[in-house]
Image 1 (cartoon, rainbow, N blue to C red):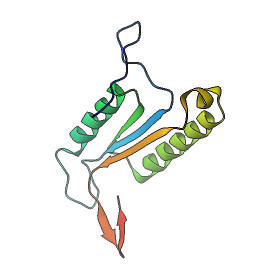
Image 2: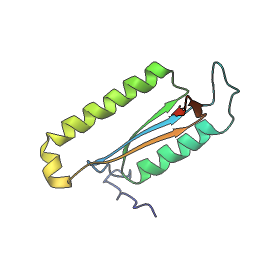
Image 3: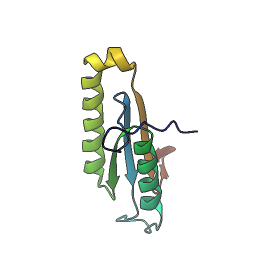
Image 4: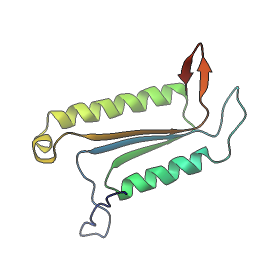
Length: 112
């Protein structure tokens, strides 16, 4: 069950300050067959997380560099939250990282 964030005065769902999400959807690959629904799945997850009050970032068909940059931005946002007054009010952060796309085992290590 997903707890839905309350609507603010504009009718939009309120962002809860301790909820962070990073969502990747990848249909296109340089060396693998393309997928048809990974981006749709990621978009649905992003919308669901937003509805639940997460500050969610959706990244579609990212390069490896895009993924690293977005992860660094998430880490920076978490560091800023940890040092803010919001941390005392809202408590520890809740973080979701979601990836929809191909996974591959290379030397017994799963890679995205």
